[in-house]
Amino acid sequence: MEQNGHVKSKRERAAEQAYEPDYQESRRKPASQRDDPFSTLAWLAEGAVGLLDEMRRSDLGLSEEFWVHAYAARRESLLALRSILDEMIERGAAETQRQAERAKQRERRGGIEIDF
Image (cartoon, rainbow, N blue to C red; front, top):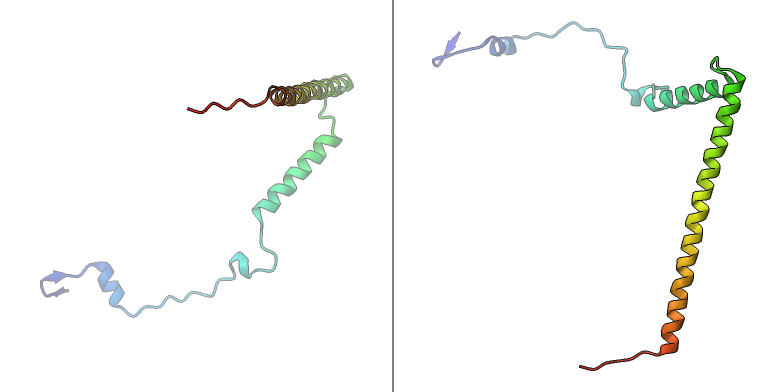
């Protein structure tokens, strides 16, 4: 057990023994070697599509009055968004027009160069 004043650990002694476990070859293979491996992303996508489809077709136990109100609220929010976008477009067009007018005014005035 002692060799040159060093006591061998159990790990070192086990490493010296000729031992080969009698395991059978596993039937499990990496995904890259299987014909049809499981894909987590595809599984999540399929679940999301199924959930959305179920929600579209199911009334979730809610009354018809609720769904009429929900549709109207959705329409109102889309109209509000449309109004905001129209306002932003108008402001952008007005700013572009103001910049064009300023450029014309500068042309009419002529450039004044000052040498120092």
